[in-house]
Length: 299
Ligand SMILES: [Zn+2]
Ligand SMILES: [Zn+2]
Image (cartoon, rainbow, N blue to C red; front, side):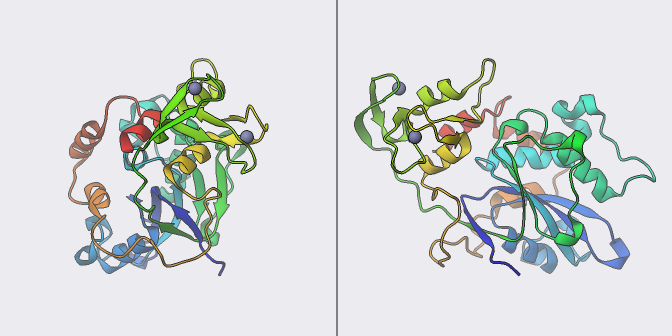
């Protein structure tokens, strides 16, 4: 078993597969900030914080998790759409229905996910599609491959809480793109190349990286050192994540087993009818999840 990759500021949406012979092949889609804690909860039951739908039907295996969402709102929207492909406006043109006799529930859910990754707004997010169980891993068919900037990876993952992000401080540095002053640490971006001196407004670099008609940058070349920069990595660095996303393993600041941050997950799991689910999503945010704006709201 290889060491888990440690990811800070983790927001993931996973699919469980039921191994219980009585319910074999059932699936469950959920959201979590801590996949290792979450699967234990599902397998222990509702008394431990597991979902009603998975209670007493275990064991369940978490076979795949999509992560890299910028915040809980973005991940919860993905979760809802994956659970409700026919009700999701962005997927309606695809008319996603399980092919009778040709497709298992699990295969259908994977097909839905692969279609979701290819439409907006998800196609612009810096997502990772992580197979947690080798035996379940399937290649994406050519016609449904995720966008190139997304990463398909294998192996275990461990979430780590970000230490409370540093408060906005007033600064007075010059943006090297517009030559105006940057007044807050939260509107400043720097290059991922440690020897590059690029300092810029978030908005100035976003303008440089955006193609016409887009509202969220994906990637671009540093105007100073030419390093290829993924927008998601730049924002993660600004938020205080370590740059490569992989840390030396320490116990410091790890996502804990406490019940404290279960709230979002339970929102998604417990006794919510589809109607309520929709209400929940509506309540969370406006119409268009602009990743860029979500980020600023989150700070
Ligand atoms: Zn600027
Ligand atoms: Zn640079």
